[in-house]
Length: 138
Image (cartoon, rainbow, N blue to C red):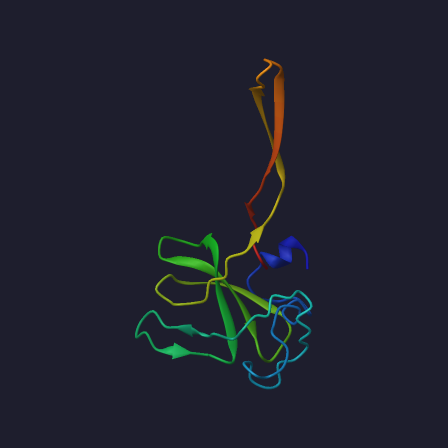
Protein backbone atom coordinates (compact mmCIF):
# COMPACT_ATOMS: atom_id res chain seq x y z
CA UNK A 1 0.00 0.00 0.00
CA UNK A 2 1.39 3.37 -0.94
CA UNK A 3 1.45 6.29 1.51
CA UNK A 4 -1.24 8.01 -0.56
CA UNK A 5 -3.48 4.93 -0.22
CA UNK A 6 -2.73 4.71 3.51
CA UNK A 7 -3.79 8.34 3.95
CA UNK A 8 -7.03 7.95 1.98
CA UNK A 9 -10.33 7.34 3.79
CA UNK A 10 -12.73 4.41 4.13
CA UNK A 11 -11.77 0.78 3.50
CA UNK A 12 -8.73 0.20 1.31
CA UNK A 13 -5.89 -2.17 0.63
CA UNK A 14 -5.91 -5.85 -0.21
CA UNK A 15 -4.31 -7.93 2.55
CA UNK A 16 -2.84 -5.31 4.93
CA UNK A 17 -5.53 -5.87 7.57
CA UNK A 18 -4.95 -9.61 7.52
CA UNK A 19 -1.29 -9.02 8.32
CA UNK A 20 -2.35 -7.21 11.51
CA UNK A 21 -5.32 -9.22 12.87
CA UNK A 22 -4.98 -11.97 15.43
CA UNK A 23 -5.38 -15.34 13.71
CA UNK A 24 -8.39 -17.53 14.40
CA UNK A 25 -11.78 -16.86 15.93
CA UNK A 26 -11.06 -16.84 19.66
CA UNK A 27 -11.68 -13.07 19.78
CA UNK A 28 -12.72 -12.24 16.18
CA UNK A 29 -16.08 -13.39 14.85
CA UNK A 30 -16.18 -15.84 11.96
CA UNK A 31 -14.97 -15.76 9.23
CA UNK A 32 -11.94 -13.47 10.07
CA UNK A 33 -10.92 -13.69 6.41
CA UNK A 34 -7.39 -13.50 5.00
CA UNK A 35 -5.65 -13.38 8.38
CA UNK A 36 -1.96 -14.21 8.76
CA UNK A 37 -0.84 -11.84 11.57
CA UNK A 38 2.50 -11.80 9.75
CA UNK A 39 3.26 -8.36 11.25
CA UNK A 40 3.06 -9.73 14.80
CA UNK A 41 0.71 -6.89 15.81
CA UNK A 42 -2.04 -9.34 16.93
CA UNK A 43 -4.89 -6.84 16.58
CA UNK A 44 -7.91 -7.63 18.75
CA UNK A 45 -11.50 -6.59 18.00
CA UNK A 46 -12.21 -4.31 20.96
CA UNK A 47 -14.95 -2.43 19.13
CA UNK A 48 -15.74 0.98 20.57
CA UNK A 49 -17.93 2.98 22.88
CA UNK A 50 -20.29 5.61 21.53
CA UNK A 51 -19.88 9.33 22.24
CA UNK A 52 -23.63 9.91 22.72
CA UNK A 53 -24.82 7.23 25.10
CA UNK A 54 -21.59 5.46 26.10
CA UNK A 55 -22.80 2.05 24.96
CA UNK A 56 -20.28 -0.52 23.75
CA UNK A 57 -20.58 -1.78 20.19
CA UNK A 58 -18.83 -3.92 17.60
CA UNK A 59 -16.67 -6.01 19.96
CA UNK A 60 -15.65 -9.09 17.98
CA UNK A 61 -16.46 -7.38 14.68
CA UNK A 62 -14.07 -4.42 14.54
CA UNK A 63 -10.80 -3.23 15.98
CA UNK A 64 -10.76 0.58 16.19
CA UNK A 65 -7.63 2.56 17.13
CA UNK A 66 -7.17 6.29 17.50
CA UNK A 67 -4.47 7.86 15.39
CA UNK A 68 -2.26 10.66 16.67
CA UNK A 69 -3.66 12.94 13.93
CA UNK A 70 -6.51 15.33 14.67
CA UNK A 71 -9.17 16.04 12.08
CA UNK A 72 -10.69 19.05 13.84
CA UNK A 73 -11.20 20.45 17.32
CA UNK A 74 -13.87 17.82 18.01
CA UNK A 75 -12.64 14.99 15.78
CA UNK A 76 -9.63 12.81 15.14
CA UNK A 77 -8.61 10.14 12.67
CA UNK A 78 -8.90 6.48 13.59
CA UNK A 79 -7.84 3.24 11.93
CA UNK A 80 -9.99 0.14 11.76
CA UNK A 81 -9.80 -3.56 11.00
CA UNK A 82 -12.73 -5.93 10.56
CA UNK A 83 -13.65 -9.61 10.81
CA UNK A 84 -15.04 -9.92 7.29
CA UNK A 85 -12.10 -8.75 5.19
CA UNK A 86 -8.36 -8.30 5.18
CA UNK A 87 -8.24 -4.58 4.35
CA UNK A 88 -7.82 -1.56 6.61
CA UNK A 89 -9.96 1.50 7.24
CA UNK A 90 -9.25 5.15 7.99
CA UNK A 91 -11.98 7.58 9.02
CA UNK A 92 -12.54 10.54 11.32
CA UNK A 93 -14.61 10.27 14.47
CA UNK A 94 -15.89 12.26 17.41
CA UNK A 95 -13.24 12.50 20.14
CA UNK A 96 -15.95 11.51 22.60
CA UNK A 97 -15.93 7.96 21.22
CA UNK A 98 -13.88 5.43 23.12
CA UNK A 99 -11.57 3.47 20.83
CA UNK A 100 -8.41 1.54 21.58
CA UNK A 101 -4.96 3.08 21.75
CA UNK A 102 -1.77 1.17 21.10
CA UNK A 103 1.55 2.83 21.73
CA UNK A 104 4.28 1.95 19.25
CA UNK A 105 7.86 3.16 19.39
CA UNK A 106 10.32 2.82 16.59
CA UNK A 107 13.79 2.81 18.02
CA UNK A 108 16.33 4.86 16.15
CA UNK A 109 19.92 5.08 17.31
CA UNK A 110 21.52 8.50 17.41
CA UNK A 111 25.06 9.06 18.61
CA UNK A 112 25.57 11.92 21.06
CA UNK A 113 29.10 13.15 21.49
CA UNK A 114 30.31 14.78 24.72
CA UNK A 115 33.73 16.13 25.55
CA UNK A 116 35.36 15.70 28.96
CA UNK A 117 38.81 15.60 30.51
CA UNK A 118 40.66 12.71 32.11
CA UNK A 119 42.82 13.09 35.24
CA UNK A 120 45.91 13.60 33.08
CA UNK A 121 44.17 16.57 31.37
CA UNK A 122 43.82 14.71 28.07
CA UNK A 123 40.61 15.38 26.25
CA UNK A 124 38.21 12.45 26.07
CA UNK A 125 35.32 12.10 23.66
CA UNK A 126 32.45 9.97 24.82
CA UNK A 127 29.98 8.54 22.37
CA UNK A 128 26.69 7.21 23.72
CA UNK A 129 23.71 5.92 21.76
CA UNK A 130 20.37 7.69 22.31
CA UNK A 131 17.09 6.52 20.85
CA UNK A 132 13.28 6.86 20.51
CA UNK A 133 11.23 8.16 17.66
CA UNK A 134 7.47 7.96 17.15
CA UNK A 135 6.05 6.04 14.20
CA UNK A 136 2.51 5.57 12.91
CA UNK A 137 1.40 1.99 12.74
CA UNK A 138 -0.82 1.69 9.69
